[in-house]
Length: 513
Image (cartoon, rainbow, N blue to C red; front, side, top):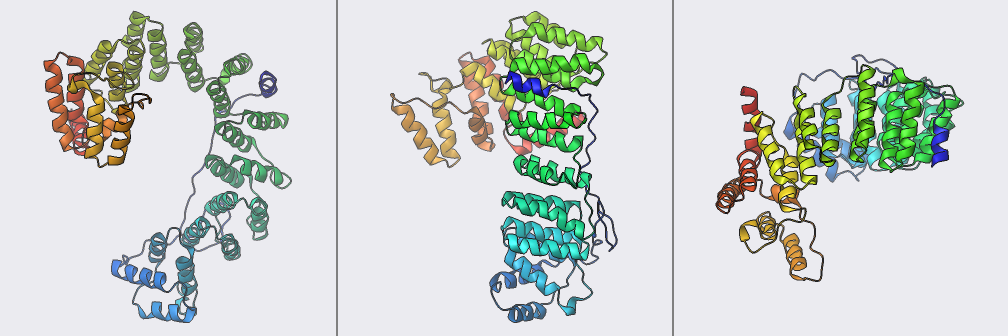
């Protein structure tokens, strides 16, 4: 791996990423090649739901009937054919190509000469045909769109994703050649949108195939290679990511800052700590002006997680010397790192300098105290964050419960704090009888490992009006036996978090304040 990363670190400089993924739509029935498309104006007549239901019923019942019978039945049903009506018919059959395609054929009749399809309606139909994996029909419809001049960038993205999922890689390349023949010329910006879509859909190998096969006609740029590098990083394939990085550098292209950060983050995630730091240090020396807060924040966060507080503080000081101001995310990483090293007073001093601590800062404190097995101090932070108007979320309660009760939940003689009993009761109330039975069986068989207690499920199953009463009663009883911290946690959850209505009211209350 050392040799691999040495290959990665070649000469480069950084520029800020400027990606454009917006597909613009404009009025007008005309030919276009990039951002514009045919889009119908808003229909002055709303779609009649009865007519829609009648047409969809006919399409479903007669989808295998001859054209003459289906078309006759549709013509006899009174409905107004508009673009909105066609789109709503498509929405009724999201994974069934036949009814939609049969309706499309019906709209192509001479009697509907005043109705013409747009890029939007064609793309909608293509999406449905693609999901049903009818590749032959899909390809025919693509050719029809090209002949009509209705292809836009969204069509490229939709077509390539469909073909890539079906492993029709030759057709992926052929699609670009086909569209070029219809006047939609080879364009690197359009290809970048396709590559971005494929990489986000975890189809990075397919994206690489398309880029390499089209290299003779479309020259990849830094954005193209950047998406491939990030795609392979997401897939955990650092060898391929490094190859794409090297290829980019060999072609005198500059890796962008987000690509650089992605490489470092992935190396940290794969426990390649030394390689990640080598990459960062080389960058800091050779391209210091390109480093900004996101990069420092990323590296400092990982250093604190790994307990390397000394290196994190040196890097933090270096960041300030370069004029990069720290944000709450950087400071919360330092707070957690200090707490893990039991430097509690220093952690509090860092928190004191934060003008507006957010929930991330409080979570860092709570998580740190839980790690130190000091749940009472974590509860005090919980009370303080509420006092300052920062509302807890589900994750806050889960951390606090794990701190007080352990990851498996407390099991003892007192039924008030026996969470196995409470959890099973919650499963039964939620109608999860099979899960409850399995849990009880595993608990009764002493020879088997009791599964980890799931606080998320516990809180979720009791997020109801019954849960509100239960948490109130639990709070009262816990106070009677001296468990004040747990009582406050459950009482607060029952008061503010148990139901959606209460959460909405909480949001309104915070706005009024």
